[in-house]
Length: 384
Image (cartoon, rainbow, N blue to C red):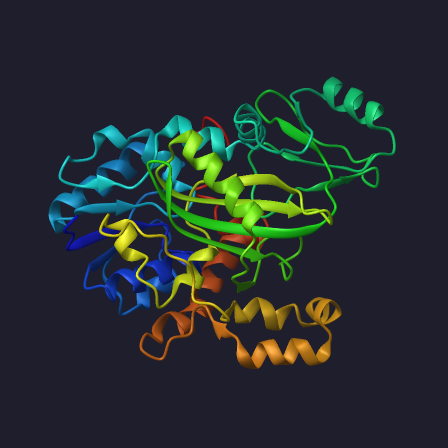
């Protein structure tokens, strides 16, 4: 595929900046469409145009019209959604000009993967290893299931949720009151003890073209991983390969796994979009996979550690408890920041302006700072 111009949505994420830089360094003109005004990527030299658009969650029709206008005006040939706006774009995929390829699988496929219950059921349908998982759609079901579990170890989370922000552990949280219903379902899932891993893959018609696995050790709370180092785990690669092949999936896809002491791997959830794993592909030709010009499997550069410095510094106490003082400072000195790039310094300094915008949203809406990062693009069911 010969591409000269690409439009990337979801410019607020660190991972999107990485992707934009990869494309720009491959000689492709990069445009960004965003509903937030002060995203870090706005100051990146990798970006030729920053287009402010409506929120897909509250103004979907206008959002799609604006994307189409950008595509036609700028001569965009490839549209890459990166965050949860991917669901809104996939839902309206047929509306985009034929001259522009939209890099998503079908809406139905994405939704089945995003839903924490239907994803597990899909894996079970494919004959793959899964944790025991129950769908809860009423308060009566919630109470009955917790009574059946007794003192066994389980976790619970909304079917549509992110950053592990509403994660509950049982039996510790057994007395916790939650809102649950057909319009706000939850899953209760067997707690698997073991080492946590994340993956990121680029897939074309069921064939993996790029893949990385990295341990999830240093996290913000129970959520996002902040340190990334490639680790080859064959059992996880085999699981991912089997899943995407049976699904005949195309696009970007990521999974969270638990590996037990005996080597068994269990999927926890799926994110059918760009994730932080892309940082490990800096210096590779993964862009050639996006453009359909490479069929050989691309792996990350080995022995490289990428780190989100602000979270590493702000979480100094908790991370020191995990790593130890000496290891904490060793990683601080030897790791590469995902954002800092001497050739493209703008986003590093503009991240503080971005945090001010998020904090303003947090105060105005009475939500957490983490929730403020996705309040206008999150897909929480049939809200498109």
